Length: 429
Image (cartoon, rainbow, N blue to C red):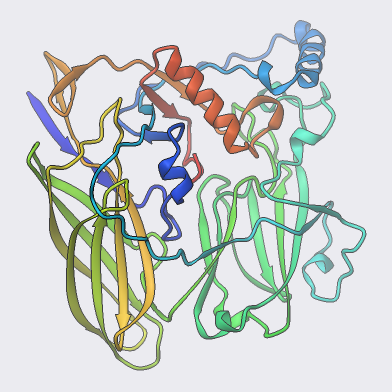
């Protein structure tokens, strides 16, 4: 018995509708990751209390070492590959600009809890200024009174505040604040009003802030509560430990996570690309629009294009489905992880009002009970490891270069698969 599974992509790299940058796409050292399966065994025995003191001493010594001493272990399945660039003679077409703004800079932070921290009037001048992502637990002193499951480090409650002036265009647009991960229980306030939050520390979330923005001064405050710090069998970290992004676009737009791409038919000579694009109309009147879908290869060469016309009632949402064909597809493979980008462009009265980019790969996957795993018709032995979301001495606010070094080292050791444990990972990973 066997099953064949074709590539699917739910904008894994573009939660906010942005594709990898030109620099990332053209960098021969870029890492491409693809999920291909999962098996995990990870026993966590209770710590031997007679060795806790020596364990703490060892941890303190390791903390003083450089990043080169960070080690990790795991058992898992998925795919890691260094991406190489290919040369073509096709015409290069520039991709449209992204609609997302990095919102990581110029935050104020303090440990402790006071509801006045949410107000516009509160003076946070004496707070610490930092750039996100941030993990406050890893900055604390190790102490045996805390639990070994969470690295003998505390949790607690912390507050973040960011003061900013709104771009005039944000006030006329649909504008969202996107959090890729806040550990653990978050409450979000804008200009003193509670506007949302998240209980799960791993799942990303976003909030529509359009109606809460001021034309001049705005204060975004985030409370992060992690008092129950022994809530996992592994180190979790505390704080806004992943990226924050502001997304502002037309009231007629493709929502965050609003695209879904599959490749139901794949051969060496052609591939069918099926897309489902959500369209949301936040205007108070109906809108007639045109959706233009373009597919680019990894060298930004246009390989397919088609258009759809539609009409959407006021304050409603719909999904448009379509299919395209890519001739002579560059298949995603272990040693040539080629990626395409679907660029979905919304036009209103002949003007482009929103653009959303969805990276995807074209490949076939086959599992056979007797023969094993096949990628693009070729048999492979899956050689996998397991990675948690933290990285030793830097905690859970992990710089991209740390992940890059780890994945490069693993690939050199023969690894071709990664299982990410045990929750949704960051977009950047």
